Length: 201
Image (cartoon, rainbow, N blue to C red; front, side):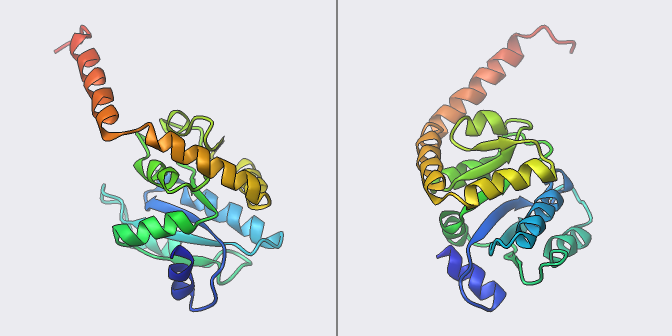
């Protein structure tokens, strides 16, 4: 499972973890999640930050972004499990095994990985930007993408397994509403709307 993958990456015993699975683009805001996890480590939480991060598709400085993602958390060595680009099967295991999936993006067009984590029955914490609040609705925690609110949201979930379970169940139900048929119908509606707008050619 996911815990075994994280343990193998760290070369130790299985540890509870928070998962980030997205590109390493700066707008995904991994730096703020890293800061929040460092605060939680300083408060005594045992959680690792598992990073399944692939290169940004827009030609950002891949090497520098990967170095920043891999770096030890300040004051909390051994808390980053960098998994690169896992297979689909491994990613599903990582999502299912995480205590929380977190995507604190500064902007997000749709957030398909959030939906995938929700489908795995995992509690999610996302930013209040772009499409994420609409995707998650009340089946997850939506906060400002800043260190203090993100830390508070994560800590409240990490301390409350019952709430995590309840949110995970709500997330799975919510994800089941997003069939690909519905997704395609939604896009068709958007395209029809765009066609009907009187835009300059």
